[in-house]
Length: 142
Image (cartoon, rainbow, N blue to C red; front, side, top):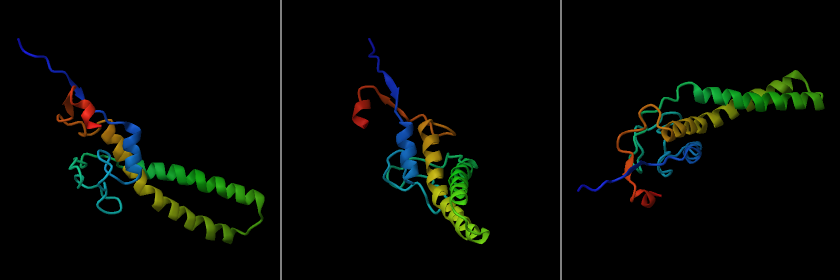
């Protein structure tokens, strides 16, 4: 009689993977850098060798960046305009550089978070056939 071996899909916690992406780390191990430049995602992690080239972040990170920065800047601008009486030149001198700095600071971590989310929910080829494990060995992985 043959023995029945039960296999489970390896767990990929979404929030942990997004958090690792926000830190610009590999969503799988959290140790290696996910980036090979400012916005270029590595083909694979240098630490755990997880394949990262499957990502399709496309326009979602810039959209999230515009959404977040727009809410911060417009809300702050309205608050300052309502509470003080400063000139338009001062508004331009403050809000334009702040918008650029916030956009550049948020774009990379948000792209990492999108890649982490895609990895965790196995989008675009991140769910390869090797992510199944014997049920008895599953607890030793984490």
